[in-house]
Length: 85
Image (cartoon, rainbow, N blue to C red; front, side, top):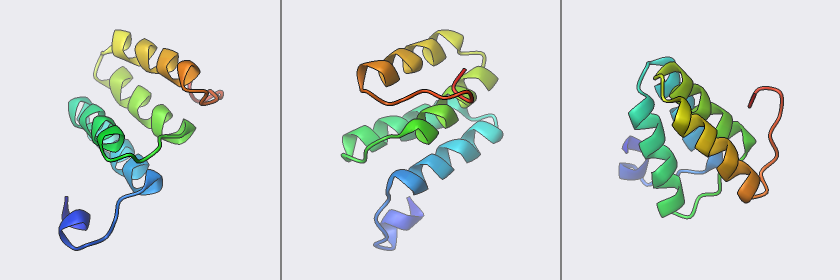
C-alpha cells in the first residue's frame, strides 16, 4: 500500500516479497489477499509467488488451500519445483 501511495507500481517481484514476508510473519490470510490483489491488478504470478503463498498456507494450517494453489499453478501453466512440494 505504501508503494502504491508513493506512485511506485507493484510487480511480480514486489508482490512475491510481500507474500513471503506475510508467510514468515504467520499472516497467511494477508498472503492470500495479496495474491488476489495481484490477480485483480493484472500482475502475473510466477513459481516464486505461488511457493510463497503455498508456504504461508502451510504455516497457517490451510492445507486444502495450499493444494488448491498447486492445482491452480498447473491450470495456469506455471511450473512447480522442488520448493512447491
